[in-house]
Length: 334
Image 1 (cartoon, helix red, strand yellow):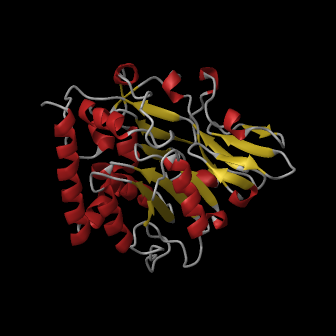
Image 2 (tube, helix red, strand yellow; image 1 turned 180 degrees about the vertical axis):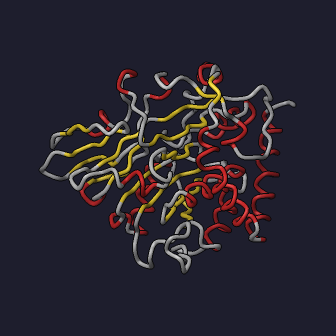
């Protein structure tokens, strides 16, 4: 496994930051997400992220093997996170990646989960088009999601998540209250969490750019997680960008998600969040929205095909799909 992905010769190609630079950095922590990894990586490389760091946490389905293959191919950097009992897998993963790979040098840093896809709706649809909207004094870009539901087929099937599940909830729905952020000057913050950087150590107010182009300030000493975790329904904003959240996918995948546990809860703690009520709430999505595929589908598919043409990646993809299907079969009677 490589410590650092080797950038291609063309800096404008996906993942093409100049050697030694950090540029636009994406970080993710995963467990048992194998069949969905390649789509996640292909999309975020295609829209311009220079470096992608992904941690695996005690995976059962071969996610870690696929991440190893993608690491050796130069597409990502894979970090094997050894989670101790009682640790929060996500927090320990982010801290480990930050420590080992110097993420404080990132121009912009974003954290997304494997079921979240950044959708830049301004400019050419690249992450650089989004951050170009920030003024010199903007510290954080704050985005809300559009949350997508399920389909009539309860089974898990291979294929692109962003095409299989085109039904979403209304924009001003409670499921779209969560926030994800892009931050710069990461060294000013004590920790990186799933929704935002936290523990600001500076003495000046932080300026936050919302997705609709408006701004607000967080005073020194303010608790960032209180502001950058959820917003009231009336404050949900879309415009420059958002992230698509495929929160449940198929019923089969959702049952496995419940079984694997939560990344934001201590290892070994029962998953009390992903209940049947949670599924039913998201499964009520009825608005058909294919905007993501229209904006990004062609580039996503091209990068997906390029990566899948690498024999080791193709073999790992097939193996993780086999293991993922076996895990589902063990908990769900088709």
